[in-house]
Length: 379
Image 1 (tube, rainbow, N blue to C red):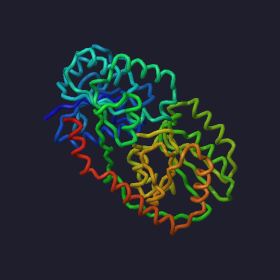
Image 2: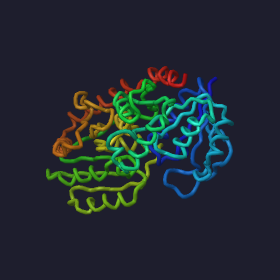
Image 3: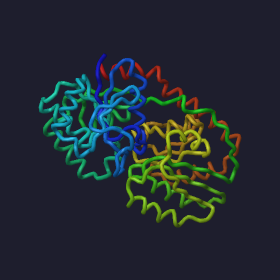
Image 4: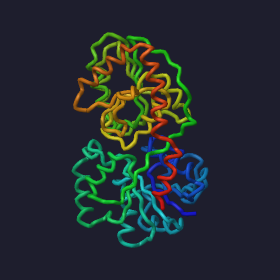
């Protein structure tokens, strides 16, 4: 049985890291009968100053079907990283970031200096989308320039979740044939059929993601601030406050809303409450600057809740399937028109969208079709 060592900045029991945590966990749970998985990660959740409670650190511990080494980020030195790689006796190293120094760049340097024999598979997790690259752009472009000079990634294999991400990878790395496409697994068993009432003149919108510039909550709020049609709108926001300064900018917009538009920050959403919370809303409103997959999008559709998205995700042509909209971030007027249409939508039209949503995501994320793709990725 081949051994895979995964490096990721946050993992279970963490929840604030969002989709990447679920992506990795689903791979482990689905393929543990084919591969032996070990994971190196931080001893705390994203943005937390304190480590997890009741988690042993600085040693390999069993967590479900995988072994996990929890450590403080500052302790993950060059020497220690190499030691963990050798201890794992891995055939493959699976990285879940391009720009993380401790959990990605350091490992690529070790390979480039020939300190290890394991093959590297790297999943950029949306970091190469134009919207994501524009955040701290100069720093990122400098690193990309340097890695091209030194051919740093010539021996790295790439995991893309769709054809769009393949294009993004090639824009950064060049015309490589070492890109493998495999979409993310979805936990279908965690979701149940939706029964919901939709009254014209009433709209419940949902945002679930990290509060950071890449996710574009500020843009969502600015769009809502332009809605002048009479009716009651509730916009509930769930997610960790990753960027406090950015959240303060969002609050300045929230404070301008009239009484008929209520915005609530609801904290971090626990995994076990996800399906119930999504079902209580009419639409997911997520005009993100870039997602390589977007677990929350798939989860919303699986819960029977249609989506209003930007066109910076792989979930495209949604209106054709009557499960939502994917709109250019340049076309704010269309966003406003769509939200107004959703506000005035009646039960009959909405019920059709509910039915279509669950069938649509099932047709795309069939786990049986994905197994062989992941097996090929690590062979």
